[in-house]
Length: 269
Image (cartoon, rainbow, N blue to C red; front, side):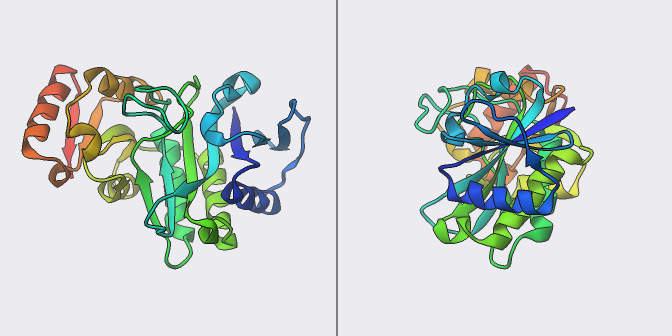
């Protein structure tokens, strides 16, 4: 089983992470694929992309042998909070300002996301918050599972060597360790998802796609929610709801929708 770690040459956080990967693990130069520089370590390939990661919509065609793609990336936020995050790409709205297509979700592999989150929790430098994030940005069209592991939220953190090491080790674990846990789709809460993160780290459930409060407050997109369950590796029939992180009417409508979809288990946190 071959796995791909991808990083953009334009991204200072990604380059920091790549330097750490090359120093920590036995990568050797591989055969270049066009303008993509490639390194290999066993069944793991590391690709340095010329373009931005969020627009890398054809990587599954360039690397058809890859079972999944894990992206090393920067995270940006206005708060400039030091963060290490894991999330699935996808667009929850009728716009796609940051790659991918509107109302299209990437394929999630929550069990491997958990492996990354565990390492981040263990190795995060002092002052860095660690969490899952809500589903956002591209690429959304790959036919293989995709996840991002990111350093946020400004140049100071992107170039922090210890942060780069933590993400490098998280990425490596996510593609080399054995995945465990029962896959779930998350609902409620803010863009950062502390309750879904806690469930993923401590319980038997592992959360992939997350629909935050702001994506549900104006109405529930049934087809998009169906897409999230269907686009979870090997299928998914569990919902984890941040109960206090949703308004009462939205909760009621969501429970009704999930029941109608035949979701087998609804977990309230």
